[in-house]
Length: 367
Ligand SMILES: *[C@@H]1O[C@H](CO)[C@@H](O)[C@H](O)[C@H]1NC(C)=O
Ligand SMILES: *[C@@H]1O[C@H](CO)[C@@H](O)[C@H](O)[C@H]1NC(C)=O
Image (tube, rainbow, N blue to C red):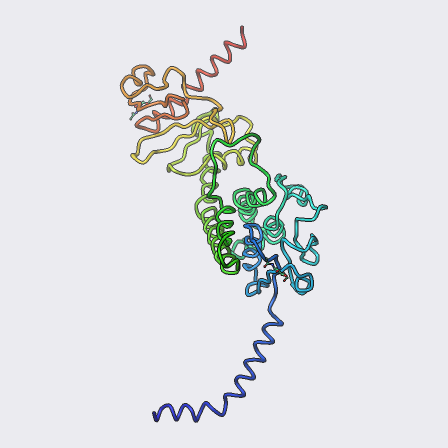
């Protein structure tokens, strides 16, 4: 009780002052505080992601998100996404619903290839994405690696959100089965059910904001820490290709498991590789060697050159006998991958396939 009295005595006289000053402080903060405007009611992945992106920037770090369709309230916002019927980056208005809007990443940045109509997510990403990624990764905005990540995350995260929001299907025709777990559909499920008593969307919106944010950061971390470092490995292998075989059509990775396909296609273009690389050799988890064919394209099962037809589906001793190559392990029935106990063996399988292809091309040429 003595303590209480002492505290009471010492703090009481100061109370009115500190309350007043705190109120003043709060008022000042409120007027200083930036405002991000978006629509209220049912929320979608695109504006949730747009709000998340904006909140990662220093200037909107503590910004309040105002969800309304009231033009007067929106007019007071520092940036408005997905509502307002206006796209004007100069005054930070990023809606895509107006009839006049038909922009894609490509139409606004002709050097980029994506022609999917933008949603508020893509619009905000396009205008703030480099700065956003720079802040999140500590890479400089003009770092080439940052540009690679900027492209990668549009193509593998944001573009899908743009397309879904604009009702653009992935392909013509009917899907064989439905995909119901995309980020956009999971955000959709956080809205109130039509028949639930409360139609309040604030809590769901907050959950969605946390969810899309976590997934974006997780994906960014993956691309930065796992996918991007593979590029250097592939680049070195491509530069060393003539040391592996004079043809330059075989490359070797000293470590397996590295995601190489996409990097290889990009690097062949960048490094102006004129004879396309046909085979990739790398050790598997058991220390044996794999020979894998380079596919004709990123999303095809066709190969630039498949492993010799007569070896396909044959294993071990039978394969060694057939090929005359010691210690062979297998060639997949479709001919896209094979194994040999050693690097030299795998290399020999690649060389023999190249020789056979050259012979058959020469034979065809003669006839
Ligand atoms: C959205 O906001 C407007 C204006 O602020 C309000 O009149 C309307 O009832 C709200 N709609 C929903 C679905 O909350
Ligand atoms: C795999 O094939 C090569 C090619 O001739 C062969 O020399 C090699 O011995 C085989 N594997 C092993 C473990 O040696």
